[in-house]
Length: 235
Image (tube, rainbow, N blue to C red):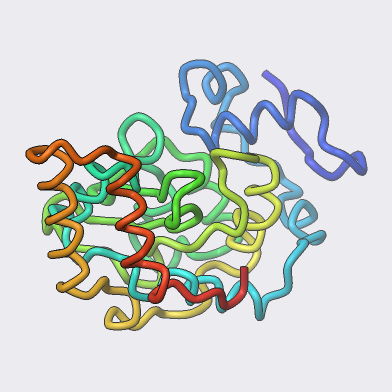
């Protein structure tokens, strides 16, 4: 088994890149198990000294998700049908959004959660690349069917999509979280998508499935509905 130090050298080795990428992509069979994911680098604190964004930008990242989050899992499944979102990985289950108590909310605790294959009831959905929702991450509890907004396990906006650039995502989104955690508690009312928007999306879905509207036409209608809502704050 390899031991990973991450900052013994100025740049990541190919093996380290493969290891990090496999975790981000939830590619357990081909990546994590091959490298031995129970190994926790002892110098993880050194690893996060070099962070590309400052804490103020990190604090404000979820302003990019305001009014874009369906409140219920059923509503999210509508957005999946419209090809705007998908579960992350094969199951949507990640250790990073299934932490159990504040005692785990430390640098070492977050790193263990990042590596963990122990998952709970929370499921991770991400906006698909090249859509208006790229970068948006929303967590739902499978039992309650409701959005998760608590500071420990909530979804957070990605400045760089892991679908496009896993290592860029690690540098700009994962490392700030490892260093600082989710430092701001979101107000649920700021995140939730308006019910009238949901109704408009339901209509578009009906037109696509029953009236032969093309996916491209449907997406253009979605763009016209959502553009006034989407505001660029800190991207």
